[in-house]
Amino acid sequence: MSVNPVNPPRPALVATNEDSFAYITTTSRWPIIVTKIIDDIYKTRHLLDLSEVDKLKEGKEIIDSIGELKYSMQRKKPLIPIEDDGDPDIGTWTYVFNTYFKDDNWYSATWLFTECYLYRRIHSMFARTKHWNDYDPFFRQKEDTFKASYNAIIEIAKRIDELVYIPKLHADNEEINSGRIIFHELVRISLWGNSTDLSLLTNLSYEDINKLQDMGTKKLEELEKNILVNDLEKAWNYISEHRNSRIDIILDNAGFELYGDLVLSDWLIQSGYVKEIYFHAKKIPWFVSDTTPNDFNWILQTLQSEDFFLSASEIEKSFLKKFSNRLQYYIDNSQLILTSDYFWTSPYSYWHLAEQAPNLYADLCKSNLVIFKGDLNYRKLVYDCNWETTTPFKDAIGPLASMKGSPPILTLRTCKADVVVGLEEGTEERLTANEKDWMYSGKYAGFSHYAYNGTTLKMVDIYQLNDSLCQT
Ligand SMILES: O=P(O)(O)OC[C@@]1(O)O[C@H](CO)[C@@H](O)[C@@H]1O
Ligand SMILES: [Mg+2]
Ligand SMILES: [Mn+2]
Image (tube, rainbow, N blue to C red):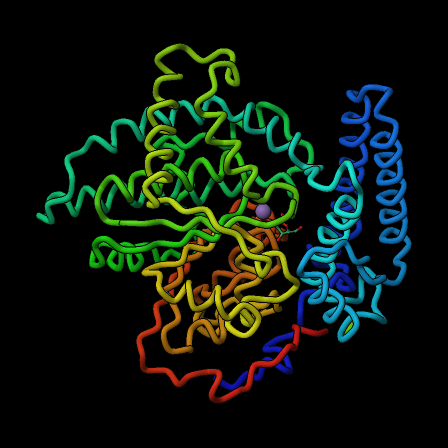
């Protein structure tokens, strides 16, 4: 492939383009997101005892810093280095900032960088305090939305209860076929769970949430026409051929989406197709709704709780408890393993995975399938560049498609950014004719799969990957 990552494959997505979702995000969405953080800190401060003077004071200081941040992005001010907060990734951030972005502002730097930088800077404001250093300013939103997801959660809990009691795999054709159908259904639930993305849906009503999360069979069928790329059958063939395999899920959003990922994992383990599943969470609060280890532990406790879903009947609670007992069993028996790495919250695209996080990469190479959830993971896989929509997925993921030993990849993504690859000729034109925002409205989705087949040359042998980023 004739792309050299030093000079990126295509121009990067950037907010100077006023027709882009990068621009809409920078001008309109981020100010709302940061204002909500300020509101959240006010709420938490309000609950504090007046004797907690130091914490109250620090809270006020964070509010002031977030206010300054908001002002600087709205006035297109230059980016400034992230202050040292003692986290082990600060060196990477300082290096990348100084090398590539020190002369940039919130619009001129690449969108992928500015957006990651935004969340990393917010984290640093909390991390440098004494009383707020492990505070998640998005937790309240994640918790409230999960509560409002009650209807879909119960429906799905009933469904998984039926599915896991289907007889275990004996490899006869009938069972493989029923496995295939269940896999397709549960992967779709995990996919469409990605619509409940709190960074995109900044103003969700209870009705909106319920509409988004209707995962009945009829609704899933209706949504089928919005799936633009569908390599799911290839991924299924892969799973059904590799019994007792290891799967990795690079998680995206907490709450309802994570719930869908857990449901899929439950079935994959119970059906006997998969032996162990690694869940990769974010180390720090990220893109509003992303899953942190705390969110993961929280959902397990919440599914067990007597009083979280107040209107749940005893039988409904029992479905949730049975489900979470199974999950706890997998955790206790190292079949479901939670892990996290700073690479997932670094500014680097996944073209740099092997070079920036060699241990993580080596570990992922042991996997039979790495599932990347959500939009940001997709953006990072394809270097957040302005690809032609007909570019094959294989080309857009660069080294991950051509390095010997790279694991097979499956992406489950609803389209929420100005980059989509792997489309057939004419699809872009058909969609653009009616819907200017089709690439980022969240209405469309895709499953892209790629497995290294051993015939391509080793990318690193051809192009020495170094520390370049996709520059404008
Ligand atoms: O990764 P997710 O949760 O599916 O989406 C993250 C997201 O909301 O943030 C970015 C824009 O702010 C977009 O890439 C995307 O819409
Ligand atoms: Mg630049
Ligand atoms: Mn997310």
